[in-house]
Length: 438
Ligand code: AMP
Ligand code: GLY
Image (cartoon, rainbow, N blue to C red):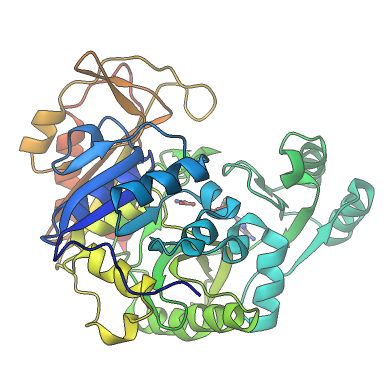
């Protein structure tokens, strides 16, 4: 087993490395840069926002270049590596780092199966008696279609493996369900679609609970709510997430207690039983049923995007200390996670055409004014080109504001958004509104 103590801390000066290029990684880097313990932050590959963040330096390596990243961390004496996206986790980046005694926050390849194989996650939930939608796995399209006919619609069809958030169809009719089954088996999702999961349709409100764990103790962050559909009023296609807010009032203390004892603790215990030492973030995507019961829709093996951009601005505890406590298996020894009061809202501004085809290369202006209006602007699909900031991806910015109340935060964030221009950026006008009505 690797040495759990961080050997690479130079006194109280920690070099951190963040793997990924999205808004989530910018938010992690921004939060970590506030810590007096942290001397330098490398982002692989980072984005236009991390390029100019104090203490930060972008390093041009690919997130799936596991050998390159590990070599870089070793040579630089990085004392804490944090992995944003699921792909390097599912490839085993943590196993490689641990074999070399390099401190890293994230689960091993075996632990990452909780996201990389939905059928594996379902078996784990069954084992741990975690409430979730009833489901069955299929490898034959004809048998899957027969099953759907028996069950009727609405019904949910999921490619088993990682499909960049595109592998789930909530089918309201049998015809839609059959099309979705054919799509999964068509090879569009590669090996991820060779097994298809057919799942009971759950009604209710969604809640994202991101929890940090050292493999034994698990502590939730503030509950958040994502907005997955592209259009206002939850209409249009599913996206990576168009905005989020925290804390979501839906996550009352009573409900959070239930989630802790019925979902998070059993999940960690079941992982342990499988011999999996899960240290990192466990993300529970939950449906809260009309009777107030939490049911797991999915687990992710990483922080959520854009939930992280909404949650981290409210964090009071130094992020590096929380993460190192997880890596060093001493989360139970440190004080509870401390939060600022108030609320936080993140509005994602995406390129015209997202999520299908996004136009890139547009100049972005107005970020300074948005910041003057009190917002934090987390970058995702941006890059610096000849000292100008241009769009380079689907989700471009995550504009975030905090306030004493959710209504204050919403007013502040939309005022900030109004200052930003980037070639017909699209965004939802209703992030957080649902929670202000209850
Ligand atoms: P996922 O990509 O697994 O996050 O799923 C995308 C979205 O599909 C979720 O955020 C839910 O809105 C919806 N969804 C997934 N599973 C179910 C289910 N069993 N019942 C209802 N909606 C679901
Ligand atoms: N916000 C959804 C996700 O990170 O998977």
